[in-house]
Length: 276
Ligand code: WA2
Image 1 (cartoon, rainbow, N blue to C red):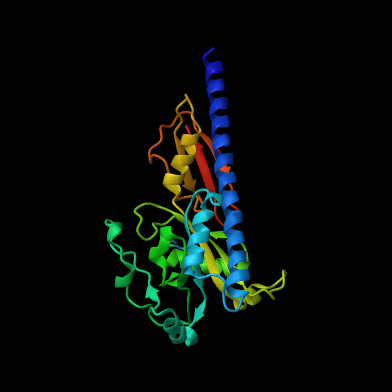
Image 2 (spheres, rainbow, N blue to C red):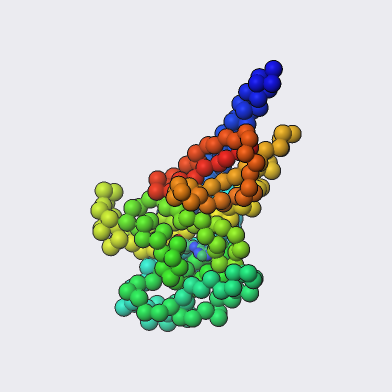
């Protein structure tokens, strides 16, 4: 009898876990497709038109009005590729200097003020943010290549042509772990079978979306009203021997535990949901 109940409990747990995994994965996939479409929008109407049909105000309006298309995201922004030889001309045209990313005091993220940042030190190239959704307006003018996680994402996105994810890290003005999804924007004459070097050469900029994982997973799980309480943990298990807890209590009771793989579309990252 007891073992029957245990069996039922295990099966129910496994169903609930799979259901949550599917929901998270589906919502992530939906928003990833829309971020991809935003990259094409920038390519078509920003770089593809002379003069550009998209300025900061248009971009802020459009991304605000289409935010419902990007569940789980907390903001989207566009950073443009600027070579050092073009830096001065670029800064004059925009009326600001390219800033170096500085995480500031992580214990008081609300004190973060973009205007107080130092100019970016000399590099071969930069990726300053020129267009942003209002929710991430504080990253405009910051060189995304001066942040370790953002830089790695930019390099991987442009060489691969795929959407890529960072490992979890605290965003500016945030005190928990988030992830960033990045798509490169290319010149339109790039052939579909281009080599990584051709891709890098044809890169114009980077469209990125930030995911505030804890609060968004929380919202999502709340929509699944359930009489049975279950504890859900989301992990980045890219490094198997050092999983990173992205959501949920750090100590989960061992006992009934069920594990499902989460696929966020970037083969070089691994995520899992564990429910108990
Ligand atoms: N977006 C929002 N807050 C951040 C951040 C970021 N990256 N990095 C640190 N805090 C414009 O991949 C290009 C977004 C980076 C895109």
